[in-house]
Amino acid sequence: MVFSDDSTVAIHHNNSLAWLDDIVDQIAVQGYNLIVIKGDDAFSFPDELDAILVLTASVCEHIYRQFQSSERTHPLIVLVTDDLVAHNTHADAVLPANPVQFNQCLMSMLELRRENLELRRELADAQAFIEKQRRLADEVEIIKNAIVRNVSHELKTPLLQVKSAVALLAEDVKDEKLADYAKGATARLETLVKNITLLGSSLDMTPSPVIVRDALEYAKRNLGRIWEHNDARDRIRFEIEADLAPVLADKQGLSTALQLLMDNALKFSKEAVDIHVKKIADRVEITVSDSGIGIEQEHLDRIFQTFYQVDSSSTRRYGGTGVGLAIVQLILDHHNTQIRVESEPGKGSTFSFTLPVVSI
Ligand code: ADP
Image (cartoon, rainbow, N blue to C red; front, top):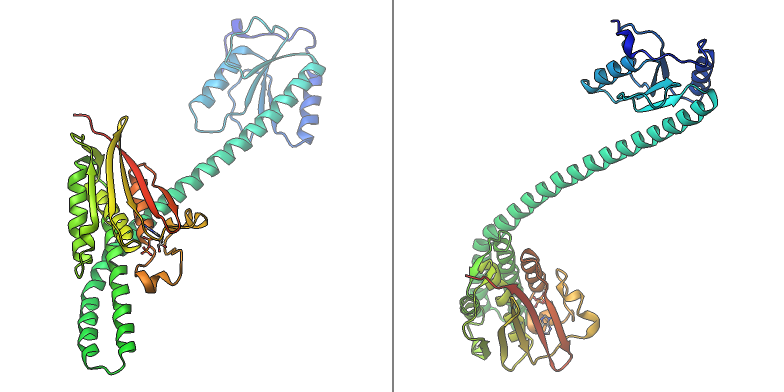
């Protein structure tokens, strides 16, 4: 291929160009791969090229377009000329045909290009890693959800059979302690399965307008099934601000969270459990308070961890498995809101959170 003469730029100060070949040799020693295009014939370039030094603007233009239409990593395209101002070409740089200046500039550019390529490689690796982790997290999420849903379902029937058998056997068994132990263990298993079921139902959250009173009533009705042998449920008191707008929440999730908080409040206290609901700016605050045993400051952060119980003997005394508050936190995380707790040992505890009001 031949280029038109008008775009050809001469190097005035030194037509021998021997200095350019010398510089290319010197730079090559430092591990850079350069090529000088002196003529204007067709050319093809090897891979892993760091720079192409070109002596005419038209050739420069052509090489630029050649790389633009290919997928290859772009080497530096450098126009070497005395006429620094006159050129409006697509070169990455126009460098003076002066050996000292040329050498300095080219070296800096080559180093920058290497650093740039290295950073790009690191960025691509990091992006690939993030993408892999994301895919892995998705898979784990799917497997976890399947386990949570299936396990609770599959455990229910055999658990019911064991519970009935234990109850029957306990009637005849002489060792009462053993009978109590077996009954206690099945009750604990039952709570665990119930909590896994709750966890399963908390995995899919679909926010929609929810009337807080409905969610509270629903939670209280469900509590009635758990506290079936006494009147604990009657200790619950609602104080809900009048004309309260609905909140944006998943109804099932919100009810589950409230049920778990009320269950704890009933379990760890003997007096009334108060639920206050009021509007604060564009959110609704829900507070569950009891005047029971309370929680010491040092445990407050950790009670939301799965299987954490303040007192290891509390399982025997109060029942429970230490997953209730972890589920509450998971549900509220899905609602982008945080649970707060204030408590004083011997005086009681208050758990509260807010949800956005739906304006209709
Ligand atoms: P559990 O099934 O043991 O109740 P949770 O995750 O619901 O599990 O609660 C974790 C721990 O936090 C409980 O074991 C208890 O020590 C403490 N806790 C939670 N709620 C209250 C409360 N209202 N009053 C006192 N302690 C509480």
